[in-house]
Length: 521
Image (cartoon, rainbow, N blue to C red):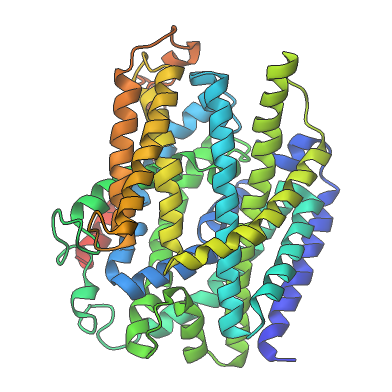
């Protein structure tokens, strides 16, 4: 047996043991699917970080760095830190004060049952698409490193991940994510360290124009691979907030924290983690064009190829296991989240519209939802061959389906007059605008410099259209009672000493981010 396969099989066995161990702690469908306010802070933080710092991110953003250069760092800095601060200081208290366990529930309280049902349905589609992306990335990694046929690797890993999620539900997923997070760091950090030792890499001398995050960007030029307007507004002010403040998987993990303070600390500490991860992921991607002499357009293979180039047999085994662990973490997160949203938000709401009362969800429906999601992921993973790197596919999904919901969410926070009717119209129009822009860009009718630039502009315009309609369409009914409590400008937002301490931590995080941007400018 190849030595680089031994750590992988050991890891597979351990994940199944974790699933068996957590099975004994599952008593109700809520324990199986949500586990709200029941897990220790350390587990929640590690699972939150792992849900984002997965191999999808490593494979995708290292591909971005190899393709576009140091501007990939924007996905960590301007594309994460401000939104995490906003989530910790303002958004998380809103969720926790109302006892909300999911984003659809919040929209249901703010706008009404139709908005909750629409959001649950669209989120289920998004989770399914993201699960398929994880499977596709896994196939690429296995193909490059282990030379295992794609169809067999997908079937094997789907069976494994589905098994431990079925055994322990979200608890098994989150406890395994702690192991996955540690494995991912151990397998990828040495690669970043070795690449950082290359002469001229960290100061940009060996990279030329690709070594700067700001200097070489035009102000407004959709025909460029990226421009300042697209990055600052499209990514920093729209896409990042729609992801970090409303993403179902991330919110699901934050909601499991036992205390309100812990739930608010998780995003802030995760922000410091993002600063560290930026170097681990982007530095190998920057070194790839120098070390690798392959130009087949498959940038998603950057990290596996770099591991083959710089790792020996045993380190290659650890790196291979790390990537598989991260991909399984992402896949498992989306499977459990899909089951939760279908059985906690979607199906009970459909039942209540027929029977007039909301019924409890049996565990067996969650099991069935997990199985359905696993099977669908196998088929949908084939769609990702249409993109040169998987981050383009991820950003496209959020531009079309995530950003319009963030506009609806934000409009409900800042306006008492926003109604269910305006929210439905705003979401529909925003999604149509984003899809139209991306479609025209693919046809060449709008000359975008890259697929990522098209995603940024689509997100920017979709948010503008959706928010405008949410705010200007007259209300057809009085605002719901919670709207008075969910306004952004609450006078007591930073009233307590705990809030002020969190604000100091948030300020430090923003200062560290500003320093990083200055160094790599």
